[in-house]
Image (cartoon, rainbow, N blue to C red; front, side, top):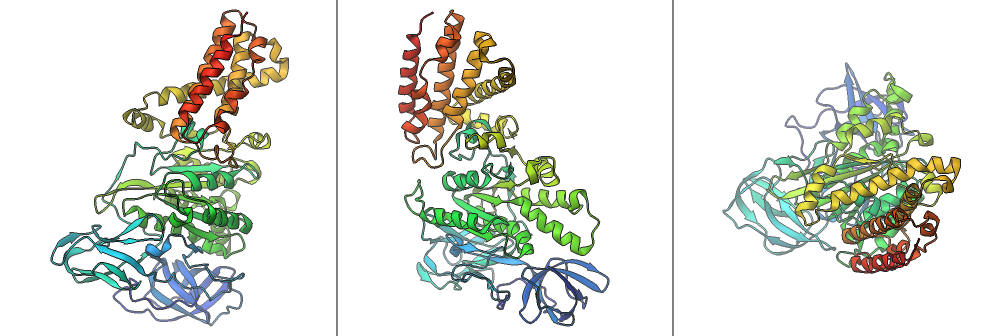
Length: 589
């Protein structure tokens, strides 16, 4: 990486520290001699190609660095140049629609193969149609908006007074277009541009963290109905190979009602990442009609890219999300997959000779996972706006073992768990979210939010659907053992009810134009329709109608309602419910 000098980079007052020499190189681990003037997490440039690295340990006269590029060709005695600042990324309006590596270096135009030492920081994008909000002589505080800039998409992004800043506006740029590196304001003697550097491991400050009572609408019925997540919440999505993790995360990226999506491809296969990028660029935004990519930032650090850049990529994605959150936007960070990130931690720990914990992972794995997820929050920003960062992290347990360390530790720290079930996936039931192995700790507060929003029936509807599924699961093994005909009539209806809920509500096709996304009103209508039909079936068997007669009824119109109606067509679902109830009235003892 030939990193250019940047006058906007925060440096220590002591000036540039002296150069050092490489002592040892082993994979991504580089040891250099301590010459003073450096600190933990400082950035360094290694060797003739000036490869980027980060200081992760200082012990006596030896400094340990994790390199973010391929270290082949490095040798003891070569020069290491301390940069005098922590690992930082450039944040600015030009991020939207971009594709970057784990250090937020642009991949557009990089060619088919990435050679070490050829990376660079994201370029300054032109500030399009800047519109000032303040005038010269006004006093402003940190986090306050000085103006806004137009982007290629629907968003208008704010230029904010940086954290720790504030004072009198001495200069403010006029309305119109400006160069990307132009100073748009001078506040209290500080020159402010539209973009700025920020350390990736330092959370951006906020006024306060707040409790959110609003759910993130994902458009996936099994999630929105049974296991919702609040804006600013955290989710883990564990599942074995082939259970549909990437497909589910792609669906959420396409359809959730966040303002900005930060998709971090952390150690996944290159073809999967290519599919994500292609689909995001081709899909139309259902809310604006424009391209979905215009409000998406993609951090692509695939399995064949430098391993330790994978470790940095999740922090890079979080820093980008916090930048947009500070403008009062709702942001979703999708990390696929945190297991690959943890493998990078394990790889580097083995190089340092650290004492391994369970399955070879470092002893600090739990703390590292917690530090990542705790940056998610709904907040009041420094400027007084409301914003949020919601984190959804995939977990890839080897062999589907949910007790392995990454899955077990992650489950401790997240608010929601969407466990993907192999049997459901193999039965072609998608999304394969297990209703028995998943949970949402946000349900109580979101129930109050639904009541306030005019849907007081939401908690009761959710509880009834959950009860139907639980009862059907309880009877499933018994049916396999003795057969459905041996069950009492009401229990036979319970088995039927479970099938209707699974096929008529929870199952959802990502390939269907009408069913790929489902609005909250249609989700409620489908659940209410199935529950109403189940209640009528129970009334019939209680009145003496044979259970076999009820089971022989054609429930196809009800099960097809999710495909035959539009994403928001609750009225169409109600019509099919009424027709189904009318058909059941014709069933006689």
